[in-house]
Image (cartoon, rainbow over all chains, first blue to last red; front, side):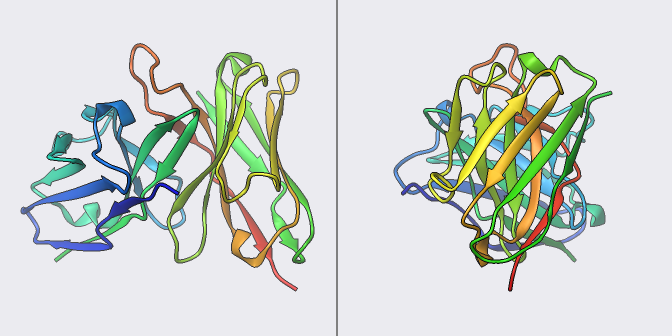
Length: 110
Length: 124
């Protein structure tokens, strides 16, 4: 079974830059998996940040960006703010109508 | 404004069944694929199932295939998730989301927007 792996946790200082990654157990991540990133805050519905690798969703600040780094998808937060402290999930399309979320990264800003 | 409202969650015993509903408004429902995703306590988001706009195509995660069934009633603008043989590990908040095929043009978020979710607790 294909597994999507993210860092379990990450810490960044206010104003700092952090790259969260998303890897595929069966090989490299490419734009063909349409990597997307969601922010999840407890008690709220997930919020779309990035889709199709690097397209920022409406209303998302430009400090959030998406890319392919090597064989992984990446979400970069530049100039981290306190309210960026949240859980971040990537999701990849595996084909045949199947999507798989990564395990999520808990981001701490301190 | 696009709105999605899930309902039908609650407490159910292991081995039991539950049917979740997601009422949609603010968009052409019959033209839109729909997806169910869950968030279990202490765990991450899990994609469960998707259904095409006409209801002719459906897909399932391995973890729920054979136990869960997705369906829709376009006359009622509602998508359903029938859950059978429930287990403790199915305890989660269940979200529905409007979805688009990954190769759609122009590109769009695969799941957006989302409902607020409905809590399912499987326990004796």
